[in-house]
Image 1 (cartoon, rainbow, N blue to C red):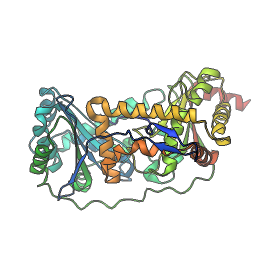
Image 2 (image 1 turned 135 degrees about the horizontal axis):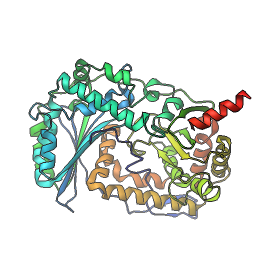
Image 3 (image 1 turned 180 degrees about the horizontal axis):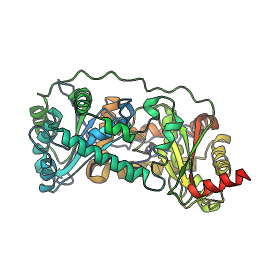
Image 4 (image 1 turned 180 degrees about the vertical axis):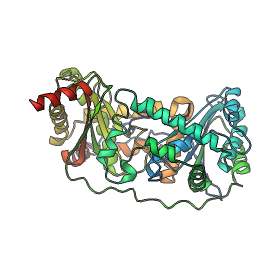
Length: 470
C-alpha cells in the first residue's frame, strides 16, 4: 500500500546513557556504554549519499532511498503534490513497467512501501539478503527516470483524492490533530498548508508538473541510499557505484525559507466535525531548534508528561479525572523527533467527554506543566524518563527488520551529513539536567507559545448555537 504514513512515530524520543550523578558538582557523568551501530558513509561523485550498516543476525536486508523533498516545500499552488508524486514513483520506470516492481518484491518474499513526511519522501524494501544486488539496480532504475503516462497520472490523482476522502473527509476526527494544528500554529505557508492536498490542487496537477518535480528533486545529489542488514560493505559499495554512479546530478530547486516568526500569544482554533461522536482537544507547543540542548530536554519532557501510563498527563487526565480514555501525542506526529528538519510542534491530544469543557482541560494541563516550571524534577523522575527513552531507542534499532535503524541513519545523513550521530544519541540525552528541564519547560511550555485546537461534534455545535440564540 503506497500512502502517506500517518505514524505516531517509529519512536517518540530517545534517551541518555546509563549515568551516575556526580555528588560534587551535581552534574551527570555519561557512562561508557553506548550504541555502536556500524556505519559506513560515502558520497558518490554525483552527490548521492550512501550509508551501509552491517548486521548479520538474520539473512535479510533493508534498502531505503530517502529524497530530500517532503510536503513542507511542495509547490504553493499544488498542495498534496509531494504525496501524489510518491504514488507516481510506483507507476513504472525505464526498465520496469507498471506493476513489475511489486511483482519483483513479492516474488522474492519481500515487502515494500513508501511515505511522504514533512521533509523527505522515502521508499524502502525488506528482502532476503541474496537479492540485494537486484534491488539496488531497481532503485537506481527509477532514480534514473520514470515512464509515466497521462492515464497513470489521472489514475493516481483519483487514488490520492480517495485517500483524502477516506482518511480525512469521511471519517471521525479525520486529520486531527496532525493536519489541523500546523495550519493554525504556524504562519509560513510552507509549514502551515494542507499537506494532504486540496482536491482542486490535486486535480490541477499535470504531466509537466510531474516531470518538472522529478527533475528538480529526484536526483542523486538530493538523496541518500541506506542499506542495513546482512551485507558485505565492499561488495555492496561496488554494486552501488555500478548502478548509481552514472545517474547525473541535477540543478536542484532553490531551498525556500521555512523559518517562522516568533509566536507571542496563545492561539485558538476549532472546527465542527459532523462524524465525531465526542469533542476532541489538542494543544501544540512550538519546539526548540533541532539539535539544541533544549531540543533534547523536550525529548525527556515528552516522556515525563505524555509517554506511558506513568506520565503526568495520563495520570491526571485519564487516571484521576477521567476526562478521557487516553491522551496521546509527542514530537512530530508524522514520524519521530529526529526525522524532520524545520519548525515542529510538541502535541498532546485527546477525545473527551462532552460535559468537560475546553477551559477545564486547559487548566488541568497547565497545572501539570506548572510542576515542571516551579522546581527541577527529581533525579528519580528524570532517570525513569531516560529509561523509557532508552527502551524506545533499542526497540527502534532492533525492530521492524531494520527499518527503524534505516530511518535514523537516513535522517542524520540527509539533515546533518552525519549518519554516525546514531551512536551519539544517548550521550546527548545524558547531558540533560533537571535544571535544563525546568528552563526548557518555562520557555517553551508557555501559553504564549501554544495553539489549542478543538473539534466539536455537529450535534453539540447545533446545541450551542441554539442556546446562544435564546
